[in-house]
Image (cartoon, rainbow over all chains, first blue to last red):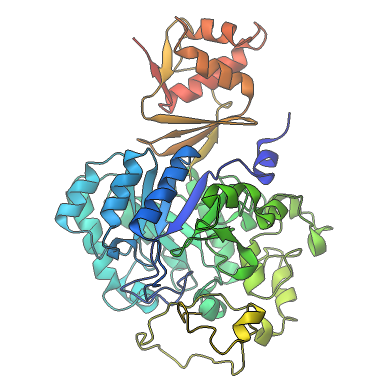
Length: 398
Length: 100
């Protein structure tokens, strides 16, 4: 009998898990934002278009969507879309910084079986959190948690992106979430979006990464990871989860303008499979895009072929390799055997791919130190971008 | 995502001589390997790793007992212990519940 994981590697007729970023608008400017969010994109899907996507997801029997952004709750039709999705048997888990979780909202969320909430928190203390997510963001998140707990919402999620500055707080994060009757979710820092700018200084040290693995082995099923850390399986025992790269096989991303990408960490033309606005909609993109077809083919191990850990780690995260300038057939930049660090040392840092679509606030909060700037021209995405009118219509966000 | 297979563990939690059905909050999606189950209340995802188990689960609601559902799906006597464990796992995780 074919192993289950091989079915997943070949792709399913519909995703198991879909991330849907409803808006690039956000009240915060987190330094590691995967989607470089801040400003709303004027081409954002309308309410009717978003509902049509929900209709498709219902037909495809996608059980639930992970809604994010940006800050999804700032969309004026956010609650309307949540209600529409749950009425059509598409469950919703949404990620928020907590800005709109009032007492009324918390009570309403607590009463729904079909909506789950995930509060983002990147430090167990205000000092550590606010350095990454911005001043006041810790208080906002804790306030939202207080209100959810007071409303009787059990088991909401607290989602932490693991960084060099917070990885020594794992026990504190666990204590904090336990005190709310919530569940801790830990995910990997990816060099995607603005994360590409801070990855060098914020990605965990090898020692922290090893401690994280041991901590995850110890805490097992009680902590969610979104299958983030399968690259750590090279240490030995696999962590709970599917332990494979699900990009284009069992997961994908729909961005606020309806573009479909292989995964939430790969907002770049190289990983864009199509748009829900294309003829055939999301279903056709999922089932027929040439990009997804290629991701469902057997992948080459490349430079990892002779490594004994490859069967466990599967070469790690495609997006992490891509945005650090590493070949996709080869080690992850955080390869537990150290092959990624070696490979990185020969990458020309001025030539690494840049994430597409920067929606950052133009007046971002003050940074702690000068941001390194590369002077130069980006390669145009398409030949027609050389036209002097390119960017004048319909938007100039690229 | 939480995920677990439906073929590990013990047979505790199922009585083959009683009638079961999918929990009303569970959605099932057939797949080439079997099916995916998702429980909207517990937010757990589960995999039915073979088509025959899917046939058993589908037969549960129509048959008077879980044992009869297994027979209707073509589960032989030698395979029954394995399917009993799979059903027990589904019952313990609230994917199935006893039907009146």
